[in-house]
Amino acid sequence: MLGLTLGLLLSASAAPATVTINEWQVPWPDSRPRDPYVQSDDKVWFVGQRSDYAAILNPQTGDFKRIDLPDGAGPHNIIVDERGAWYAGNKAAHIGKISHADYSITQYPLPGDGRRDVHTMQFTSDGNIWFTAQGANKFGYFDVAENNIELYSIETLRARPYGLIVVNDQPWLTLFGSHKLVTYEDGQVQEIELPRPDANRPRRIALGSDGGIWYVDYAGGYLGRYDRATEQVNEWAMPAGAGSLPYGMAADNKGYVWFAETGPQPNRIVGFHIASETFTDPVAVPSGGGTIRHMVFDEARQSLWFGTDANTVGQAKISYSD
Image 1 (cartoon, rainbow, N blue to C red):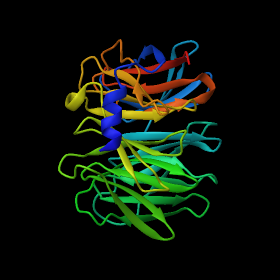
Image 2 (tube, rainbow, N blue to C red):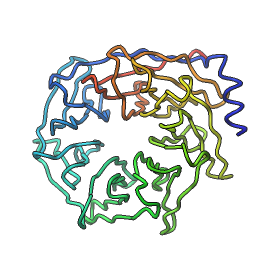
Image 3 (cartoon, rainbow, N blue to C red):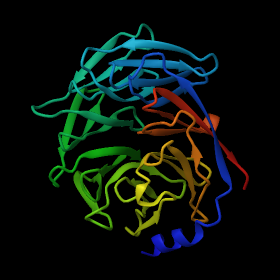
Image 4 (cartoon, helix red, strand yellow):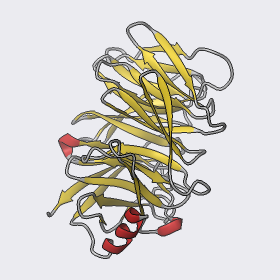
């Protein structure tokens, strides 16, 4: 409760940072563009979850390039390296790789039966991939060189493994259907309980510049931090309170954690200054946003990138005055 109390006390004075938001209207209507990944100044990848495509936005010209995926792929997430663009085939039980050279697609099916809904992915330092599978109640590891996928079960039933990050090649994930975080270390799946078990529903997750594991509680409207050294959890009530519905989040390299409040319409981008435990003034998303489901921090451009249910791709450029 210390973290919660302190956060409420200090939030009266806004943290000295803000964002300026620019959005690009995606030319394929009602396709739910999401999960941008910045490859370069002129290439921002994203997927169209409802329309089975991956695409590249050139922010300098506003041009879009569409790559059609297999019918029914239901792409949910995309990550990019020099080998290609890797997408989560959420509705078709596979991870796909799009070639940079000719946009050809290689599919890597998940093993087993039942739900195999690849959800959120992130690279390890050697180019392998950890991922969550929400409906399957599992998370997985894709050894790309060996073309081998291992799945790990969550003990808590209907836990809905959701957001995921990789820290020193170790996966950390949220259980959206429960009040827990999960990590995997030394061959063991470890579940970590959070406060407010009847209400806490962690959805997205980020590594703060302080080394803390940060999460947003979608149901209760809190920002939380798990200290890996002490195992202590602190939480702070969001500016919009219980109606915040915080969803997409990311941490920058200047001591802030950023998130989207999707309860307010229009959605709002808000930052939290770790050192002072204060929130920034909320900034409304010009398109309204609908729901911002995932955000990434782009250090080269000091920006947050996101997709919206208003069928846009957005860039929130961060300005610091401290």
